[in-house]
Image (cartoon, rainbow, N blue to C red; front, side):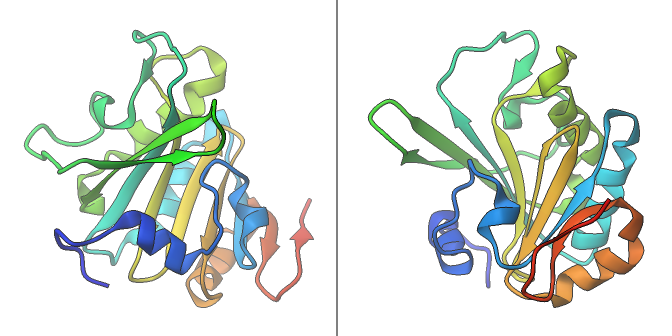
Length: 196
């Protein structure tokens, strides 16, 4: 899969994960996935998982699904407006499309192709974890990171955890062996197993 001006995120997601709703529980929508416990005090887990997944990627797609709800602009940032997310010298081309769930629910997906090394993962995952706790800064919407080459999609849904889904088991086996004590659920053999 090549990243160029013709890259179409919506078509890519539809091809890799047919019927996937970014607004829903990714783990239960995919036949292959791993769910991890994170926690406010252990955001470094999210950073380590990110690094394990994307360390060899030249580029990834950083995307945000956001509704039009009103939010406190002093605390809630749109993803690409989050201070410190990317170095000031990095100016990604941000593209978007809309998804309509009903007459009243329209979501905008904004996305950009970035180098994983440019992303301040600690800042990003802290802002996601802060969403439900009245802490600043917080990022609005649901943030996902996709590597179309390895066909892996990561989503930290809040401070409690992170789901990683893929089109095949292979890219998730390393995560299982490296971070098994953090896993709270997995689907790697065609069955859904919850771990305690």
